[in-house]
Amino acid sequence: MPSAPGNRASPPVTIVLLAGTVKIPDRVGHHDYLGGCSLLASLLEQTAGVRAILVRDGWPHDESVFDAARSLVVYSGGGRKLALLASPQRTATLQRLVDSGIGLVMIHQAVSYPAEFAGQAARWLGGAHVAGQSARGHWPARHSEFPSHPVTRGVGAWESRDGWLKEIQFLGDLHGITPLLWSGRAHRGASSGGTADVVSWVYERPDGGRSFCFTGLDAHSAWSAAGVRQLLVNGTLWSAGLTIPAAGAPCAVDAAGLHGYLTPPWPAPFGSRTCRAPLAPTACRTWQSGPRRPPKAPGRGPATVMPMQLPAELWRRDRSSGVGGAATAGATSSIR
View 1 (cartoon, rainbow, N blue to C red):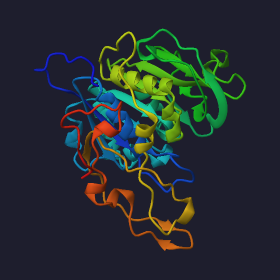
View 2: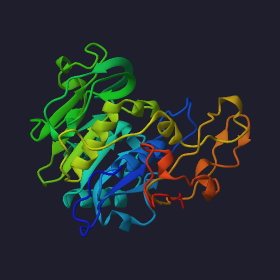
View 3: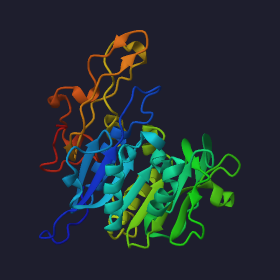
C-alpha cells in the first residue's frame, strides 16, 4: 500500500525510468532492464505522491517527458550501448537536465562510459566505470556493512552472487561522495576492500542535484533480496529530493509478483531455451520509444514477434497481482 499521503494539492513527484533495450537473454532474467524498471516503478509508487514514467529502448520519442521529472533512472547496457550517448543532441539534453539539478540514478552497466565521456560522466555521478581502467565480475558476497545515510535506512543484509562493476574512477578528492556498498573477490562485501571495491554510492553535486549509483542487478533475481530493493527505492527517492522514513521507504513485493515482472519470453522458434515467465505488469505510465526490428536467431531466420510488439491486452495487468498483494485504484495501464 502507498505510504501515508501528504498534501494532496501538491503536484506529484515525477520520476522517469529509462529501460535499455532488452535482447534475447542467455539465461532467464539476465539484463532484463525493462522488467527491472517496471518493478522499480511500481515500488516507487508505493510512496504516496510519486508518479513513475517508464520509457523503453533507452530514450523517448518526445523529450517533453523530462519536463516535470525530479529524477531520471537509467538501467541499461553500458558504454556505447547507452542510448543517452547515441547522439550529441541526447547527451546535451542530459547535460541540460543535470545543470537544472535533476536527480540521477544509474544502475548496473549504466555507470560505464567510453573514455571520451568519462570526465563528463564523473561530473554527473561522482565517478564512472571506464574500460581499461576499471573492473567487473561475478563472485559470492555478503553485504552487511552500511554507513549511516538516508539511503541506507531500513536496508538489511543479504548474500548473493551478483555481477558488479568496480574500481570506479572517482573524482579526485571524493568531495560530496559517500560510498554505500562494497564488493570484490578478496573482501567479499566488506568495507575493508576500500575505494576499489565501492559498488554503490551517492553524490551530492555542486549544482545541488543528487546522484545515486548501484552497479549490481546483473539479473532480475537480484531483486529478490529485500536489502537490494530497499537500497534502490531509497536511493531513487532520495535523488528526487524526498525525505526517506526512518525505517526506509515501502518496497514490498512477494515472490510471485517479482517473477511476474520478467519481460515476456520470445516466441518460437527459440525452443526449449525460451523462458516461460508470466506476463509483466506495468503499473506505471509508459512512453513508446522507437520502432523495433525483430532479432535474427542464429541459423533459424528472423523471429516474427518481439515482446514489445505483443498485443496490448497481453501487457495489461492490475498492480494487485504484482506488488504486496494490495490493489490500488486506477493503477492498471498498458504499454502503448
